[in-house]
Amino acid sequence: MPETPVACPDCDLLQHVPLLPPRGKALCRRCGKVLATDKPGANERTLALAVGAAIVFANALPLMGLSAARREVDTTIIGGAWMMWQEGQQLTAALVALCAVVAPAVYIGIIVVLLAVRIYSPAPLWVGELLHWGELAREWAMTEVMMLGVLVALVKIADLATVVIGVGIFATGVLIALITMVAVNFDSGKIWTQVQWTTVDAQSLPNPTPAIDYQGVKK
Amino acid sequence: MQALCAFVKTPGHTRATNYCPRCGNELAFRRHEAMERTWALIIAAAICYVPANLLPVMTSITAMGAQADTIIGGVILLYRTGSWHLALIVLIASVIIPLTKLFALAYLLITVQRCSAKSNRERAQLYRLVEFIGRWSMLDVFVIAFVVALVQLKPLMAAQPRYGILFFAAVVILTIFASQSFDPRLIWDSANKMEERNE
Ligand SMILES: [Zn+2]
Ligand SMILES: [Zn+2]
Image (tube, rainbow over all chains, first blue to last red; front, side, top):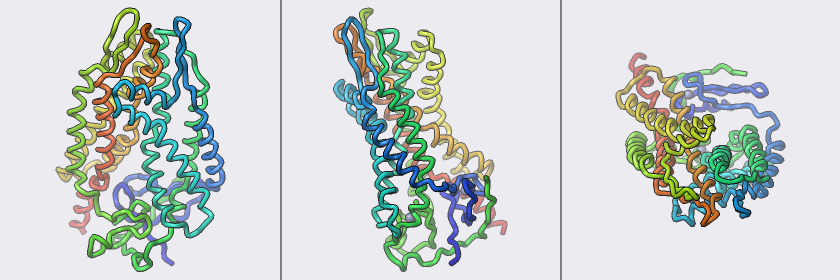
């Protein structure tokens, strides 16, 4: 069966992605977009990593504390959004909760589910649906931005009162590392190729009009 | 035509046949009204940018009294308290990145409208840069959130968010939506047309 050409998502050039060497990368020959990467044996590792990330995530609770005049307060990640909400900034609070808590949790959750069902081939249609949501969640998951925000906040507060760094900060650091590793190892392209088609007739053979280009493989 | 899962297919005759059989995404030559939507979103973001910078984002109440800070005020305060590294990071995230996004997207829209076929690769890279840096402008929203969450030792000291942060958050969301609604394939369209003409 002839391989179907792939259209570059950024510039629409139709081209064939050649078989990649281990850890090889195929770039669009026109605009330089990464079209495919070979992720050797990524899935098992990713599953373990994702579960690890989920566990760390659940535990990343007390972020930092503040003490002055023998009084103490501390906060968690969700606490940042909660105070915003109570102070009458509900929209901003919702955005903070979405980017710092909801989106990362959804992303990790979806990856765990996807890797758990990946053994079935062809994969059911809802797997494709999940891939959509995972993509969206990843865009809004801003754990690394939040971490930098926490550090800046700590420095800002430091001259007002004594700041106590909580374990949550370290847990968040680990979480960021895990999420990055998951994102690097997770091969959504591989899962897409396993997703079932709704209709057979709809796969009427793709008909590439422009000349098909074979592009170089960068290693 | 191409869908999210990189499926390519010849166009169907009705709209109903133009859905990907695998991911259910609509197969479209270009994102619908990409230009109009992106323009609308960046204009809205540019409008929100004004109150985001003029209004205070936070009030801190300490023994010395209440003090309202704007975004730039916060950067200056960080610089004065000695951490110029962090001041620079906040300046980049809160001022330079939103402005870069607005100007870069406006530039891409204008060049597409003028059917420019020059420096396509550079413009494609500029678009990727905008997508990559976009999220970092959320930094100040997180900073304010955590300062407010922590500085709650009433009546000794307290911090309250103010409406500037709402407008700033709006700028961040609108610019993220704007870069998502822009279709980078538009950059290549005039080059494609020229090639076809030459053939
Ligand atoms: Zn391309
Ligand atoms: Zn599809």
